[in-house]
Image 1 (cartoon, helix red, strand yellow):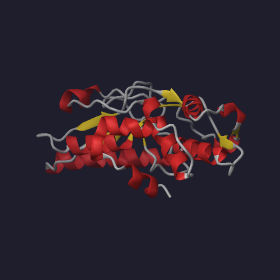
Image 2 (cartoon, rainbow, N blue to C red):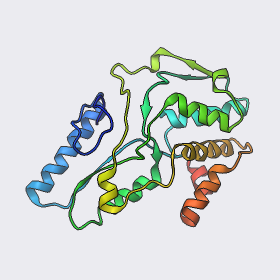
Image 3 (spheres, one colour):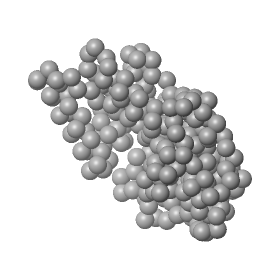
Image 4 (cartoon, helix red, strand yellow):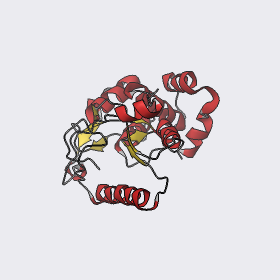
Length: 221
């Protein structure tokens, strides 16, 4: 939705969508606002920055990286082909964002909220973090393929979730390096490989019995 808008982006930032998908989300945002204002319907917009987990689809860059890493380590794949490694994203942990959506629906007054971590990292950062965690060097395996460059690139997304923090104390428990470990552990386990285990421990520490790791791994197949 924010696309080419200057970071950081918050509820007052003008939308500059850079794809048909993003334009469709902007339409959904405004139709929600219209129904709320015109018919007094309790409807909120959650403007969620990139939210990831081991359940992420295989074509999305985060899961593409962790899945390929595990396949390479298992000897099933030689290289990982990617596009722009310098694109910056604000990546968070999807289950927390679902919790934020539920929480905003419990407020006395409907409103619109940006949800994100307030941190931004490049695709290159994700590669480095993931491969280093698995004891590998991403430069040995990653190849650049121009087919994966976007015709209208989104260079820099960085959330300003201060409104949500003030309204319902939004604060992500899982930060970037922890998210990477969760996803790498899960994909290694899915391949039947030993994993360092920090990702599983992060979930146990932050969420206790709320998150069922075994079911998550099964759902990735």
